[in-house]
Length: 189
Image 1: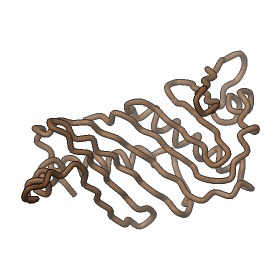
Image 2: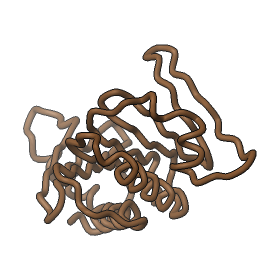
Image 3: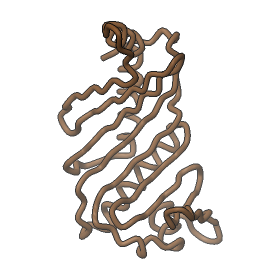
Image 4: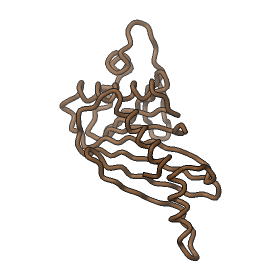
Protein backbone atom coordinates (compact mmCIF):
# COMPACT_ATOMS: atom_id res chain seq x y z
CA UNK A 1 0.00 0.00 0.00
CA UNK A 2 1.45 3.34 -1.06
CA UNK A 3 0.99 6.51 1.01
CA UNK A 4 -1.38 9.15 -0.29
CA UNK A 5 0.95 11.93 0.82
CA UNK A 6 4.38 12.41 2.36
CA UNK A 7 5.62 15.65 3.88
CA UNK A 8 8.40 16.86 6.13
CA UNK A 9 8.75 20.02 8.16
CA UNK A 10 11.80 21.55 9.77
CA UNK A 11 10.67 23.93 12.53
CA UNK A 12 13.10 26.76 13.21
CA UNK A 13 13.87 30.44 12.76
CA UNK A 14 14.44 30.52 9.01
CA UNK A 15 15.16 33.41 6.69
CA UNK A 16 13.12 32.56 3.57
CA UNK A 17 15.04 35.18 1.58
CA UNK A 18 18.00 32.78 1.52
CA UNK A 19 15.88 30.30 -0.43
CA UNK A 20 16.14 31.99 -3.81
CA UNK A 21 15.52 29.96 -6.97
CA UNK A 22 19.26 30.01 -7.79
CA UNK A 23 20.28 28.96 -4.26
CA UNK A 24 17.72 26.13 -4.17
CA UNK A 25 18.62 24.95 -7.66
CA UNK A 26 22.36 24.89 -6.93
CA UNK A 27 22.51 23.91 -3.25
CA UNK A 28 19.44 21.76 -2.61
CA UNK A 29 18.69 20.07 -5.93
CA UNK A 30 22.39 20.16 -6.98
CA UNK A 31 21.49 21.22 -10.52
CA UNK A 32 23.92 22.80 -12.93
CA UNK A 33 23.53 24.78 -16.09
CA UNK A 34 20.21 25.70 -17.55
CA UNK A 35 18.07 23.12 -15.74
CA UNK A 36 14.91 24.84 -14.54
CA UNK A 37 12.93 24.49 -11.35
CA UNK A 38 9.31 25.52 -11.13
CA UNK A 39 8.16 28.37 -8.88
CA UNK A 40 4.80 28.14 -7.12
CA UNK A 41 2.78 30.76 -5.21
CA UNK A 42 0.06 30.22 -2.61
CA UNK A 43 -1.84 33.50 -2.96
CA UNK A 44 -3.91 32.94 0.21
CA UNK A 45 -0.87 32.81 2.49
CA UNK A 46 1.60 34.49 0.11
CA UNK A 47 3.91 31.49 0.39
CA UNK A 48 6.46 30.87 -2.33
CA UNK A 49 7.50 27.33 -3.19
CA UNK A 50 9.86 25.60 -5.58
CA UNK A 51 9.28 22.27 -7.31
CA UNK A 52 11.55 19.83 -9.12
CA UNK A 53 11.17 16.09 -9.78
CA UNK A 54 8.02 15.85 -7.67
CA UNK A 55 9.54 17.53 -4.60
CA UNK A 56 8.09 20.86 -3.39
CA UNK A 57 10.11 23.07 -1.02
CA UNK A 58 8.17 25.75 0.88
CA UNK A 59 10.44 28.08 2.90
CA UNK A 60 8.74 30.16 5.62
CA UNK A 61 9.95 32.20 8.58
CA UNK A 62 9.09 29.47 11.11
CA UNK A 63 9.53 26.34 8.97
CA UNK A 64 10.77 24.75 5.79
CA UNK A 65 8.32 22.25 4.36
CA UNK A 66 9.27 19.56 1.87
CA UNK A 67 6.30 17.79 0.32
CA UNK A 68 5.65 15.13 -2.27
CA UNK A 69 2.49 13.38 -3.36
CA UNK A 70 2.50 9.65 -3.21
CA UNK A 71 5.67 7.75 -2.45
CA UNK A 72 8.62 6.32 -4.25
CA UNK A 73 12.09 5.58 -2.98
CA UNK A 74 13.75 8.06 -5.36
CA UNK A 75 11.66 10.98 -4.01
CA UNK A 76 12.28 9.84 -0.43
CA UNK A 77 16.05 9.77 -0.97
CA UNK A 78 16.01 13.19 -2.66
CA UNK A 79 13.90 14.71 0.15
CA UNK A 80 16.21 13.16 2.78
CA UNK A 81 19.27 14.57 1.00
CA UNK A 82 17.64 18.03 0.76
CA UNK A 83 16.93 18.06 4.51
CA UNK A 84 20.53 17.11 5.23
CA UNK A 85 21.83 19.83 2.87
CA UNK A 86 19.63 22.50 4.48
CA UNK A 87 20.90 21.59 7.96
CA UNK A 88 24.53 21.48 6.78
CA UNK A 89 24.39 24.72 4.77
CA UNK A 90 22.54 26.72 7.43
CA UNK A 91 23.99 25.46 10.73
CA UNK A 92 23.52 28.85 12.39
CA UNK A 93 19.72 28.62 12.09
CA UNK A 94 18.09 27.60 15.38
CA UNK A 95 16.17 24.39 14.63
CA UNK A 96 13.51 23.30 17.14
CA UNK A 97 12.15 20.09 15.64
CA UNK A 98 11.84 17.90 12.56
CA UNK A 99 8.65 16.11 11.56
CA UNK A 100 7.86 13.57 8.88
CA UNK A 101 4.21 12.89 8.01
CA UNK A 102 3.12 9.86 6.03
CA UNK A 103 -0.61 9.70 5.26
CA UNK A 104 -2.62 6.70 4.09
CA UNK A 105 -6.22 6.32 2.88
CA UNK A 106 -7.78 2.88 2.91
CA UNK A 107 -11.13 1.16 3.14
CA UNK A 108 -12.36 -0.26 6.43
CA UNK A 109 -12.73 -3.62 4.69
CA UNK A 110 -8.99 -3.98 3.96
CA UNK A 111 -7.34 -6.87 5.82
CA UNK A 112 -4.75 -4.80 7.70
CA UNK A 113 -3.59 -5.16 11.30
CA UNK A 114 -4.15 -1.46 11.99
CA UNK A 115 -7.71 -1.66 10.62
CA UNK A 116 -8.46 -4.56 12.98
CA UNK A 117 -7.20 -2.52 15.96
CA UNK A 118 -9.30 0.47 14.91
CA UNK A 119 -12.41 -1.71 14.47
CA UNK A 120 -11.83 -3.28 17.87
CA UNK A 121 -11.53 0.06 19.65
CA UNK A 122 -14.33 1.80 17.77
CA UNK A 123 -16.70 -1.14 18.26
CA UNK A 124 -16.46 -1.11 22.08
CA UNK A 125 -18.18 2.22 22.72
CA UNK A 126 -21.85 1.82 23.63
CA UNK A 127 -24.13 4.51 22.20
CA UNK A 128 -21.12 6.38 20.82
CA UNK A 129 -19.38 6.37 17.50
CA UNK A 130 -15.64 6.80 17.41
CA UNK A 131 -14.49 9.12 14.65
CA UNK A 132 -10.84 9.48 15.59
CA UNK A 133 -8.21 7.36 17.31
CA UNK A 134 -4.86 8.72 18.46
CA UNK A 135 -1.94 6.46 19.28
CA UNK A 136 1.52 7.47 20.51
CA UNK A 137 4.77 5.55 20.92
CA UNK A 138 8.16 6.80 22.05
CA UNK A 139 11.04 5.46 20.03
CA UNK A 140 14.76 5.92 20.63
CA UNK A 141 15.14 9.12 18.55
CA UNK A 142 11.58 10.27 17.92
CA UNK A 143 7.96 10.10 18.97
CA UNK A 144 5.50 8.41 16.64
CA UNK A 145 1.92 9.70 16.65
CA UNK A 146 -0.77 7.98 14.60
CA UNK A 147 -4.04 9.81 14.13
CA UNK A 148 -6.72 7.79 12.36
CA UNK A 149 -9.86 9.52 11.11
CA UNK A 150 -12.72 7.03 10.87
CA UNK A 151 -15.45 7.62 8.31
CA UNK A 152 -18.28 5.43 7.10
CA UNK A 153 -16.22 3.19 4.79
CA UNK A 154 -12.86 4.94 4.85
CA UNK A 155 -9.96 5.39 7.29
CA UNK A 156 -7.34 8.09 6.89
CA UNK A 157 -4.27 7.46 9.05
CA UNK A 158 -1.53 10.04 9.44
CA UNK A 159 1.78 8.80 10.85
CA UNK A 160 3.74 11.70 12.38
CA UNK A 161 7.37 11.08 13.27
CA UNK A 162 8.45 13.91 15.59
CA UNK A 163 12.14 14.55 16.31
CA UNK A 164 12.69 17.09 19.11
CA UNK A 165 16.45 16.96 18.70
CA UNK A 166 18.32 16.55 15.48
CA UNK A 167 20.29 13.41 14.91
CA UNK A 168 22.60 12.51 12.02
CA UNK A 169 20.40 11.64 9.05
CA UNK A 170 21.17 9.68 5.91
CA UNK A 171 19.40 9.47 2.56
CA UNK A 172 17.46 6.41 3.75
CA UNK A 173 15.84 7.92 6.84
CA UNK A 174 12.46 8.73 5.22
CA UNK A 175 12.41 5.30 3.55
CA UNK A 176 13.11 3.67 6.93
CA UNK A 177 10.16 5.56 8.46
CA UNK A 178 7.99 4.48 5.51
CA UNK A 179 8.96 0.84 6.16
CA UNK A 180 7.95 1.27 9.80
CA UNK A 181 4.50 2.54 8.72
CA UNK A 182 4.07 -0.47 6.43
CA UNK A 183 4.90 -2.82 9.32
CA UNK A 184 2.37 -1.10 11.60
CA UNK A 185 -0.29 -1.10 8.88
CA UNK A 186 0.24 -4.79 8.21
CA UNK A 187 0.74 -6.13 11.73
CA UNK A 188 -0.89 -3.45 13.87
CA UNK A 189 2.32 -2.90 15.86
